Length: 422
Image 1 (cartoon, helix red, strand yellow):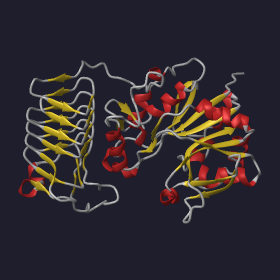
Image 2 (cartoon, one colour):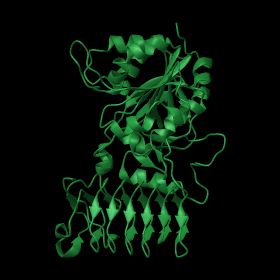
Image 3 (cartoon, rainbow, N blue to C red):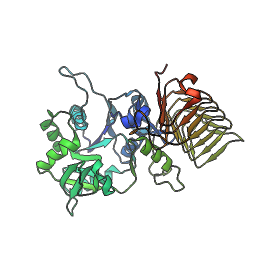
Image 4 (tube, rainbow, N blue to C red):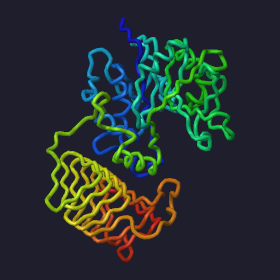
C-alpha cells in the first residue's frame, strides 16, 4: 500500500465574487498575479518547496482556466507516478450527486482520494492567498506539541479581527477557545485557513459531521474537534500573507511587488515561485519608451510610458500611451495615446487609441459599490473599449462595448457598463 507522511488538499473552487468581472469566467485562484503568475501558483509552489509531492486540487466554479493551467503539474515538478497533483472536481455518484457545499464538505467528498495515500497528516490549504510558507516547519510544530489539529494563525489589528476566525490560546499555544467572526474579539490571532490534521482525527470528524448542510471547517469541524477534547494548537506565522479577495487588496498586493524594497519578493533564489509559462520572446522596449518601477512580462512590447505598474505577458502598449499605477494582464492591447490611471485590465482586453481610463472625481459605483471602489477602473476579460472615449473612476466595463455605449464619448465615474461578449 502507498504511504505518504503528509498530503495537501488545496481548496480552489471559490467564485471570488468580490473580484467582480475578473472572476466572471474563471475561478479566483486562476486570476493573474504579478505579471506572469496565477494566484494558485503560490500555495502550489509552497507545497513543492516544503517537500510535499501529493496535492489534491478541489475545483468547482468555472474551472477550465484553472485545470488548463495546472495540467499534470509539470511546472511545480508535481508530475509523479505516485502522488503528484490531481484535480478533483465534484463528480457524478451512483446516488445523490452534489456540488461541494462548504470547505469541509469538499474534503469529505474526497475521502477515498486521501485514503489511497494512507497519510499520517493532511494539510488543508486555500487556493487564493499570496504568501510563502514552509509547511514542513508547521508540521514539526504540530508533532512537537502532540497536536491533533494545528491551525496557522497570524496577528491582525484588533479592529479587523471580527472578519476572521479568532483563536484564544494559553501560554503553550494550545487553543482554549475558538470564535468565528466575533463581534467583540478577545484576541487578535486570526486563522489563515491553513490546517494540519492527524488523518484519523480529520476522517472521524468529517464522517461524524457529514450530514451537516454546507459543512465548513471554521463553523463545524474545528468546534467539533475542540468539543471532543482533541489537542488543538495555534502555529503563529510572521511572514507576508495577503488575502487578495477584493479588487483593492488585489491591486495593493500587485503594487507591493514593485516597492523599492518589496515586502513580498518574487526574486528569492531559495524559494522559487513556479508557474506554467508560455513560450514567449523577450520583452521589447522601443527607443521612445519609458518604464519606471514596473514589472513587464515576457513577450510584451512597450512603445509608450509605464510608471509604477504590473504588466503581464504578451501585452502591447502603443506609442504615446501612458500607463500609471495599473495592472495590465496577459495579451492586452493598449492603443496609441491611451491614458490609463489606476486601472485593472483583464486578459485579452483591447483599449482603443486615445481612450482615457480613470479621470475626474470619484463617485460610488451604481451597481456594486462594495466591489468597485478605491478609485479603480476595472476592465473585464476580452473587453473592447472604443477609441477616444473617456472613463471615470470606480467604473467597470465588460464585453464588446461600442462608441454609442458612451454618451458624449464618456462613461461617468461610478458607472457600470456590462454587455454580452461575442
